[in-house]
Length: 526
Image (cartoon, rainbow, N blue to C red):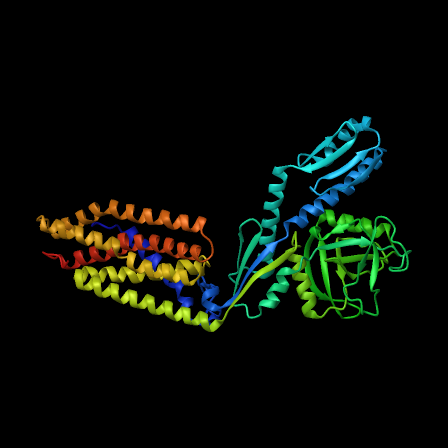
């Protein structure tokens, strides 16, 4: 254990240099760190959490029931179309109070034809039952319901994250809580209302054909059509409402890109969009078959634009125009790129943390860290002398590695994370204490300096690994089963355990070996 090879020395030096380079931007201002040369491995600073730089905390509830209601209505429409296509008579098609799709067959003897006709439609997600009197019902399976709930929540979390942090640089935390709730933490946010507005808009984009034969409010709406209000009813260039097909000709799920731009003729802000291959084909067919007819672009149940198709639009690209400002067009483009929320959300709780409070937390954390470090240094030097000073050098090396790891991983540092660092300062010298005490025992047993140090490391190694491994398991459990601040504490504690183990077994040993080779002492100052 006393011998140390050249390649081990090279590894320690390289890790130290990388640690300094990764941690260095944190001592600069953000503008200065961004101006660092590009050849450096990183010019990023570690992300500060909500409690350290202020921001918004939001708790939302997702209306999962809306998704199931939409699925049932879609099934009603699909069943109606299939039964009509097969010329099967039915009555009372709809959704009952239990959430099942129900209908009654005019001819109970046609039950097998109904089963055959609906087999591909219902798949494995629905169960069909038909009584002898023709009373029929379709109910979703438990597995399909659970899968839908999981899918909705995963989509909601991911879409919220893409809306709030499209570049992945804000350190936004979006995580599921319970069955239908989502916790959102937005560090550095100054206007919680603007963030809520960005999060809360469903942004469901659909394309419908317009019925120009019926003027809204002047007569009955034909079956299969609906009246949809305009997003800007006061706009003199558009109607206040439109009669649209209920059928969705194309949806925003086919969008691959959306950007704010300017119309080449009017110069006004617009949003340009692009479809995927299948969406482009549908859009081309739609415009080819409906030249000189208006079609409506509907966003969250409001018509934002209803242009007339002058010619087929090929290539899968289009443009949304309206009374947009540049900021509104940029916002709409962001929403469309991020995707539509699968269900509406309700804000249950809102908290705003001021930047001054965050700065107070940082200063308190810095004071605790410096005080803890100073006390540990005094204790180690007082009790173990020169070897204690070597352990303190390794401790500083350890703190540099912790800062470098948090920066390199772009982990978010929170107040509990600072607590984890303070705890790491105390735990980082535990391994050295075990080694030094073991060396003392070997000296009392009559061993020489080199033999005592070698035996001390060998005898203490298993105890050190066991102690750190059990703590690491506890930190891992905190991370996987905890949330929010608990995860932040677990991350910094885990990183600190790994770096402290390295600094004790490699850095302190390297310093002791160099001292032994240079001084060749007859006794040890421990």
